[in-house]
Image 1 (cartoon, rainbow, N blue to C red):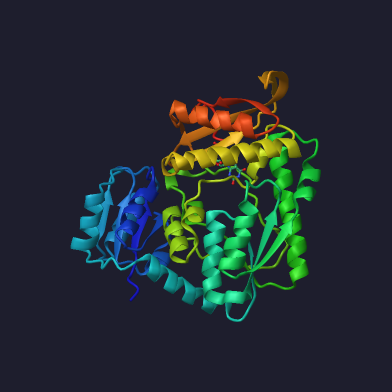
Image 2: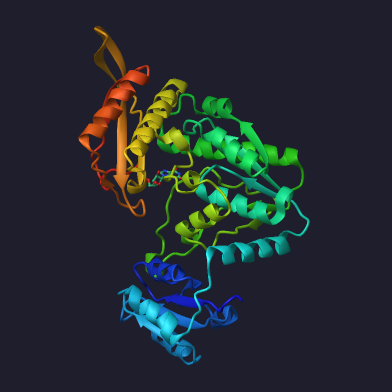
Length: 416
Ligand code: XMP
């Protein structure tokens, strides 16, 4: 039985997601809405209880009036000044309101499968699968609901990490047996990027070219009614007090504006960890579901300046070595992101008694919880030495390895 939700109203909180996570982790379904959501919408949601979060004396207009109006509805209310004590939230949820805590991963999947079936009927669904966590889980969920009515399109832009395209085919094409169309567009992207060294121009070209390729393919596939989007909850809830803070990253996966689809966003009410749990429950391999964040423009922002096949090759090979060694050292889970960069500068070295003049590779490994700020991961020196030794020995054309020890800020996580 689906329970009435807990409604968290944001009166200007610093981080409205924390309270929502405490509730979700206790298997109680909740949603976060700005305090000025209309009473009509709030009533329609039929909440079992409210939590008000924000400053003690909210600076938001009409806050006091709004609170009184809501309190008069006779629904239990917990008011938190910006402090968020997990125990206080749990006591309120269970002891005061009597929530049952029956909102589980499996319950979510069953419910969503039913909703998707009802929404899609016998119509056709298209999904741009990137291999990233969100699009993968969204595709798997829709596939569970409507099977072969779903077609996934995977555009290989040639900026993927080692073995990534093969993994997408293996997991979604073979194991899930999805209708998967793979488009090898590497040459097309690299031709468009030739001679371009400005990071924002590179991002723009990659984003636009992705849309072109996807558009062409979707026309070829014929009329599709729905388009799957891997939107997740943090993409849509913003703190009332954080108005205007929006990431400016261009994601590959931006949508053609003139194509006539209805959107299917089955993950739009889930936090990232919940998305991962759903992914695992649907049978996506653990490693795929827990993989580190990877930017939409891929290795394209890890080759500084002009992208060439050679430089991509240095980054791809050195990245594979770094990942393998981090895994061997058992550090995969404790580092937020780790990757290599080709800064594009050559330096003199000596290999087998001969002078070399070759490329350098930078190692980057950072700790973070939200990618907005980051600390440098203090990798053991012996591990750094092993990685450097392997890279100069195994990646032809590279004779020097450096470790980036700059936090964010003042640096960013990626080099571009
Ligand atoms: P920065 O470099 O801005 O990165 O500190 C913060 C986080 O965002 C990722 N990133 C991107 N993700 N498209 C993406 O989808 C992009 O263009 C992009 N640029 C950076 C980066 O990997 C880190 O997790």
